[in-house]
Image 1 (cartoon, helix red, strand yellow):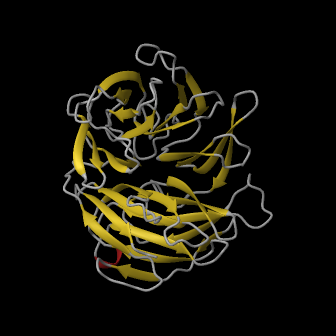
Image 2 (cartoon, one colour):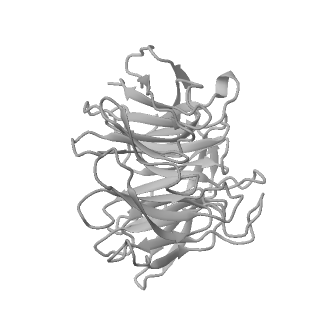
Length: 401
């Protein structure tokens, strides 16, 4: 395994600047004010073929209707234990309509609480949705639906941040329980069957369901104190774990990797993108050399080490070329050259060994989460960022082409 500092140049883009052939965005501040925008997804909430902005706030879930961005609240204070921290869309009750699983009771790892429930529409778009419990799981931090056991319906993948009864700074007493919960026949009343994917890792900040090996089955890639791992289900139903990325094992006490996504390179290969260490200061990509097996330790490249609390990662084709750009959200502020906000890294080498950095609208959003999709139908990927300390929602309209 090789660690390298990838070459990049830096370009700061502010609202109104124009650079021919360069990545450009037009920021738009929305009226909605958040407590903490823990999570954002871009979903068609009302069936009009436009993607709306759906946000998990501390005590609410709201969606902003495209294109007016009118706010609708579907979950209000008191319906779940604060804080709401994550959500995942699926048709849970089989009625053909969208439901959400919701992770709440978030205590930042300081308590042993962590509730998982699901919500379903009670009527009109402005009524609060009904809440049904699923289970409690200590410090549940990320949830996503994916079909990992190969049946007809997706499972709810549950990734707690810490193992139960663990203590800072190493959280080493117990590992995280990465679980898959089956949707039962009667989700309102029946227990959700539990499948164990892994219980060997610590401080798992996020995971990604993806067919990584290309065999038609959904795998899981996790980011934890131990680095980046691929989890594959075997024929007998058990799960095999393979380490792909080392993570930052030099920093202390936080170490490893935090957040994870997979992007495409111009040569057809993929790269794995992380923030390192946990809640760290580094943007890192992992690439594999030509002929190198997938099931091996990939090469580590540090693209940027001037972050304070990197907290969101996405891969998307921003500029219409042959590769996918890496989109990074920085949560906490520092002076001038390394302020919080949006950063984009554009691969400038087909094999992912060099990137060009863009700093977008520095200081404007303390980015807790972000999502990328085409919001206005112009076939360009736009970005929505939600803030923590800044309590705001901002759209970055793609004006690159």
